[in-house]
Image 1 (tube, helix red, strand yellow):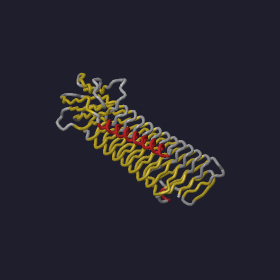
Image 2: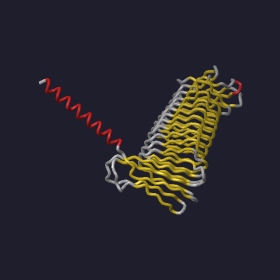
Image 3: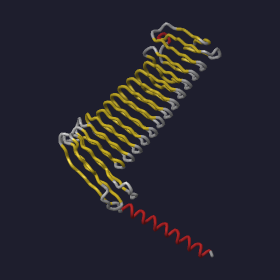
Image 4: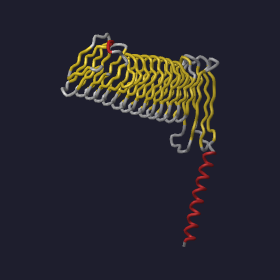
Length: 350
């Protein structure tokens, strides 16, 4: 009996190994089913409907627009095509597969464009990789595919519903969005606008104007010099090593400031406003929260500041550089006016 059980188990294991080996062999048998390559003069725009393909958008070194692509599948099929055509001064590239195809397939399309040529990429699951562009207008949209952009200048719009967005060393007018994917953006010069309902946002190194809007996604912002326009519902906001004008509005999200210098206009509903390390005001600023707490540690000398602090609750204490009052505190004669308001939250400025 034991021998029969062992024999059966051995046969089952052998069958599994055979199936795994066959599957591996099948994957390795993927073949090229479509190819295309061409060059063009005088184009003003390119449209790539890449679907599942990875699409690379690169700078052209010779002033001409070039395209090349390849599709691979498990077996030959005349339905697989890289269809391309010019419509006036626009190059249109379409990836075509059979609608009832269940075979595995992959593909890659590379487009090289000179400065000034506009590019639009529409993908579903395919990745988009942008690199080295010089003065181009580009729009990249994906459903689940991730988007990466590096060392490029221009008017760039990078949008994914579920995929991540990663950018580094960009300049110009940049906008990014992802419904749920993470966004990590570094070293941007110009104007950067970021939208992320649920995905986490990390931004490091911006010179110019930064606008960020999230719902539940957490925001981590560092090394920004310019104007920060921040909106959040429940995702926490952490800002560090930044200088400029801070326009921040949240609902339940807490705002944490660290090593920040500038003019502050911060309003929350339930979220606290915390600046517990090396915050310096360069102009009159206001901090308002309904139910949250305000706690700021300012580098400013007391003589620089005028305090205008108030709360609706008689049980809440107000403290400003060693001076404490209930409900309303006015003190100081400095040129920088610090205005704080809460309904139920305490206020401490040290």
